[in-house]
Each structure stands twice: as C-alpha cells, then as structure tokens.
Amino acid sequence: DPFASGTNSVPMPRDEGTTARLNSIAAITTALPSIKPVGGTPLAALIEDIAAYFGPDKDQDPHFQSTTTDPTNGDPYYECRSRVAMLITDGGANLHTGASDGRAAAVQAAALLLTRGIVLYVVVPGSKHIPAADLALADEIAAAGGTDHAWRVETAADLNLALKGVLQTAG
Image (cartoon, rainbow, N blue to C red; front, side):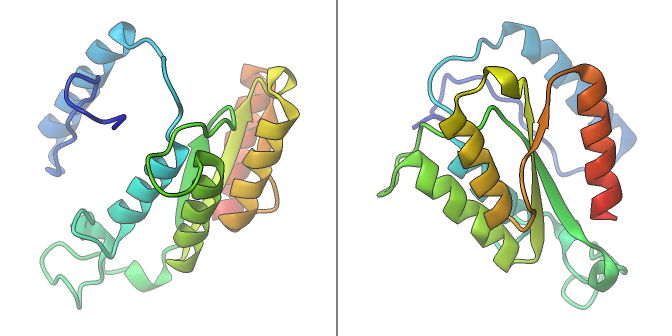
C-alpha cells in the first residue's frame, strides 16, 4: 500500500478559513524538502482520489455539491461551473494494487472522471527525457480524461504557457 503509515503525507483540513489554509501551506512547505521520490507512481490511485474529492463519494468536498443537495455548504453556481483537474506527471504509472496494471488502471480512472463530468488535463514536464511509452500513456490518460493530448513542456517558460493554455481552454 503506497499510502501506508510511515509515508510522507500532509493532512488537508476541510476548513476553508484563512488560518487553516495558511497552516496547510506551511505544513506542505515544511514537509517537501524531506520527501525523496522513491518507489512506484500510483497514478490510478491519485486520479481515483480526484474523483472521490469531486464526488459523489464519502470523501466528496461539500463545495462540489449543489445548494439543493447541501443548502449550507453547496455551491450556488454548481450547475454552470466546469469541473477540471490537472495532472502534472512524467507519464509513468507503474504502481497499482488492484486487479489490473497501473497503466490500464490510470486510463480507467481518467475515464471515470470524464463520466462524472470532470475533464482531466495532463502536463508532462521534461518530455524530451521521458520514454516514448510513458508519453503515449500520458496521451491515453489525457484522451480518456476528455482532452486531445498531454501537454509536453521542456522549460519553465513552456510550463507557464501550458498552464496558461490549460486554464484558458478549461474556461
């Protein structure tokens, strides 16, 4: 289990207050320097978490519901907002604990997002140094998630342009 106890994680409170957000940012900033990327990349699990966050699921953020469903926390503009997520990855999906391999599971998870009305944009930094099979997977995930292809970037300026393009495309 890639999320077993002892792994590096930062709990994210549901509180929307400024203090809670600043505390979360401080916790992430403190934790990042000690995290060393090792092991597999659980893209499917990450994309499934995005689906759970948007719902419907027990982990759904209450702000991703209509005011009809949740009059207190619901979003009054729920029906007219687009729902998008962005995945920044090297395209390698080599860890999954389910019945299928990580690559197939990541594509299936992206398709699940799209069935829930959530478009997934995929950005691949440093794509010149990434194996063709991983780039192809990034494109498959993007297509399953409702976009034509993964955005490939090489420099910080390219990344900035890609992020700007994604935001403009997402509306």
